[in-house]
Image 1 (cartoon, helix red, strand yellow):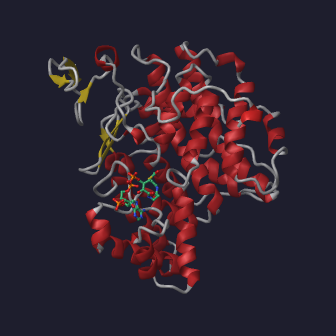
Image 2 (spheres, helix red, strand yellow):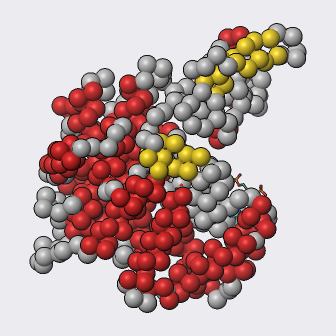
Image 3 (tube, protein in one colour):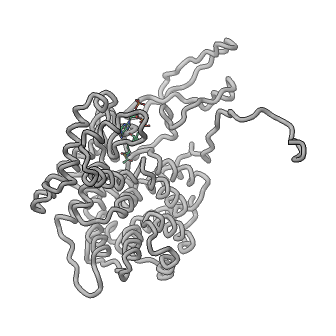
Length: 433
Ligand code: ACO
């Protein structure tokens, strides 16, 4: 809080009010408009939250024009280079990096919770054989509320902690089983001898008839993807978790709502759409330039998937890190860089970065542009891309939910509207219409 204020004059009535301005530790100051309706009788109008902070938060900071992303103050570049996903989970949840004892304990707890109540298995059988794994995720994560009654008092910090651990821990199992179900393969149980990421790969690709040892290069690549997707401030899915949780709904239900929001192609579904678009380009026989022309044509709804971001109007820092990783991984895999899909991606990236339309609108490749390519190179099927995003983002969602539950200023989310429907009118009997 500061003593800074903004003075607002209502030109219609001449009434003048002073609104306090809150100063954050980084980023733009915020005008506190909570008294506006009471004082002047106005709502503010801001579809899509273009200029509205919906809450205060100490979890993650983004500076879209500088291309900065900080988790609890630590630059994403440093975490990507030096940390692990589980350490990042601890950081996001608790606010500080763990000591080695704290990390050891945290890793043990996360491993201990990775099995699911055996009855949860039965839920999978209720889905059609070709169900999208994200549909399964929404259903199964929501269903967990029916299993863990012992810790659903959202006002009890210990209960919130247990729910957080359960969600982070069980998410790889739920995700891998959604893949196994679609493939008609036996479900693989978690193995505590493996790392968090290695265990997920083992549950995805392992089969009971042989021993599966996760490839360390893939483990590191996937761990990096999880770190980069762990949190991203007040995006659509996180805001969904906050809004649904603000009614004091249980955390499993709130996270399930977040997964549903993430599924959309304008959000987490974009990495799947990126690969579909690249495949379309490769198989269409048309040039990359023709697709770029379509993306620029106002009469054509086609957009370049994996380009643009609501907040980053400079290069997405995650995209920079993952771009480097993509090149390295494909080179290590031998010949990967000559994959026609990757060649199209590089061409698209080059054209878009030089084209006036994209430069003017600051439309840079985003993290999804590369994560799609890297996941495909690792043999992860297309429909699991958004699932992996959801798995990574669970810690971000739960950190925000936990923060909201502790915030004395938080209230049930209840946006208002600019009503444009009919004025009051009288009901007309059906025979007179
Ligand atoms: N291809 C072509 N043109 C685009 C694209 C694109 N990918 N993205 C934005 N534009 C254009 C718009 O047509 C608009 O042009 P105009 O000013 O001439 O009307 C201008 O750029 C601004 O676009 P908006 O839609 O207003 O930007 P907004 O901030 O609302 O949308 C979004 C951001 C949804 C990410 C958008 O850029 C998009 O649809 N990108 C493709 C989908 C995608 O990659 N999503 C992943 C987001 S990152 C994540 O969730 C991790």
